[in-house]
Length: 224
Image 1 (cartoon, rainbow, N blue to C red):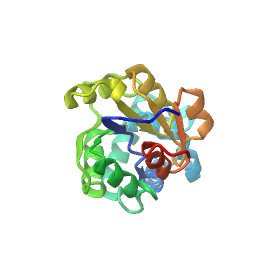
Image 2 (cartoon, one colour):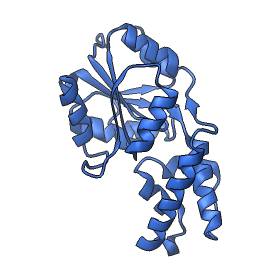
Image 3 (cartoon, rainbow, N blue to C red):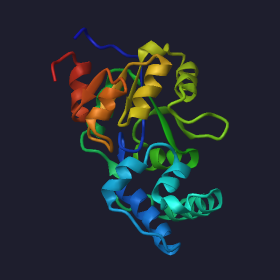
């Protein structure tokens, strides 16, 4: 592999930088239980998370109760519950701190693009990743299409003054890999996250990373 040089890295948040699975899953299950619906095993949320909070609730609801009114009511209840309980178990994945330290030492710039609601994305980054200089932190904003639409990724690159080809996109889902491809950015699949490596490969990952330290090694031009 030729030496890897990037001016910036855009990270997904849930399943990439932060392990949010338990707090999201528990909040959804509490909402479902209060509304009289069956709950889910935690592993099911690996498939539910990634397309935004409204889609998360729609997927969690029984197929017979996915009407607009029920989805909206449960979404609003989830937002309230998760807003109060988002940081019970949530933490950076093992190796993320070292990776971010190395990236900063190299003068590579950092940003975040998530389909999580924007206010919660900012809250999570400020509270748990505030030691690192993330320049731009975007969650889902109503005026900008969600990933895999590349609009958010391209906006970040433009604001940083970095060519998309000089900006690596790191995420744990096929949606992230498609986003990167549509934006013209190299795509790195975070295999420690919520989705299987096969999904990342099938959707265009240029790199498959088993652990955050793999990216450190690649940036050092070492074999993984």
